[in-house]
Length: 306
Image (tube, rainbow, N blue to C red):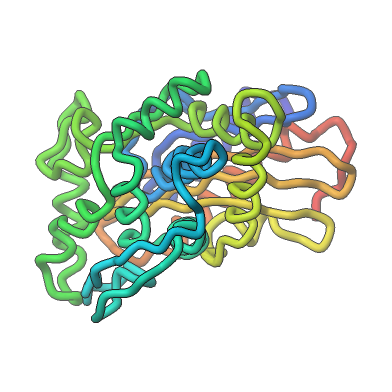
């Protein structure tokens, strides 16, 4: 099928699910790509934990941080639906840096992430990206700000009101009444920027092997498997990823490693125009679009769709 027709059909699928966004799929062996609005900038929510992990592990590698060092983490005491791990703890805990990395990436624990930001602040994370030659991702704020939105101010049965605010209070220039959704104030990125970051993690060169290897391992341990994983995980393939979720934003970026030795990077950043907190149809649609782009890139017959 011609590329234009593929993209048209996938855009229609997104629109039918009330979604828009930024998608890019790249074969890391050939550089072949397929994209939908790959350079559109969006707030990235928990995807920021990937550059954070790279910055922390780079300092572990050079001895500036001891990975076995324990950090006293104050309890998050979050009671609203969503946050995990230390974010829901009721009492202080002492946890090693390397274990905080596991909590931040594998279960997307925001409190663990902020403990790591206490060691490597946002400006230092940004500098690490710049030193690696990675552009297009901006790190401005800590993760606790993701738990200070209208969603926390409404009762669970009023979640649609927070979603409506997220949908309706934006501006044509991507400003927003909710700071975490304003691209001039939030942590932001594009599908292209995250695919570049994934390529740097999987292809030796820009990121040191002693940093890239543990990040890949932590991504493979990701326990959040309901979004893209159903369309990319299989006995013949390994799916390693990180998700990000905030109000009407649903993201996932990752790499599928095929049994033939090739690897394909996938970035799917979406926002919904449907005022509902739980949207399984949106999750399924974004996975189908990402898989459709993947299959188009892999259409040379090297693999059989599973």
